[in-house]
Image 1 (tube, rainbow, N blue to C red):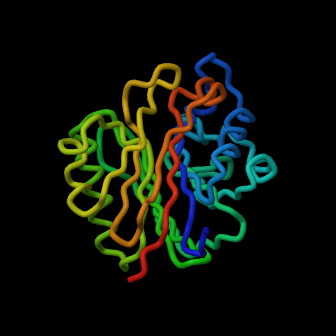
Image 2: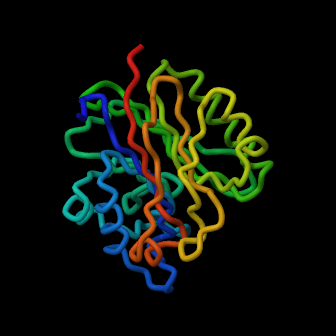
Length: 236
């Protein structure tokens, strides 16, 4: 039986709602998010990269389609995310703190740290989209880990498109303090061959089950497949 400490989390790189059929279809993305049935969803590439970085997901339709509410992360009035990273949560989940990070590297990259009040306790969610170059990813992981070390201890889940094939080489700095979970191959959505999307948890969170949502809809909606995890908060 589910308890107040149970939660379901998901992560999805939506590629600005551009599907593998080359059609940009925000409603298709929101249908996938709804299908995930998660309490918290971390999205990557929700905003366009140029100008004021407008979001590709109509904010006024998100709750109607998904039952989730965006955490206020936008860097402009028309953006939904920070460096394209957005967090959606159920309305009964309160946001208690938000931290936005610019990450080092050749490309503009970032991370968000959002503290949430779940019915069973606090959960810190870290959303990120790491760079294409391994030397940049290493610096970015170090920045995230160092920032988290300076914050009060809390049950923590990191999620996102980590753009890394290896957990031991490219994500070694993360694996020293976090357990890395690889739900399965997520890229390319039509014929997955690489597990680029992952979760990482500290010892106050236990993921009891993880998976990749791969069906006819997710094979079209983006070039990545979404991942999901069922978790429980571990008492201190």
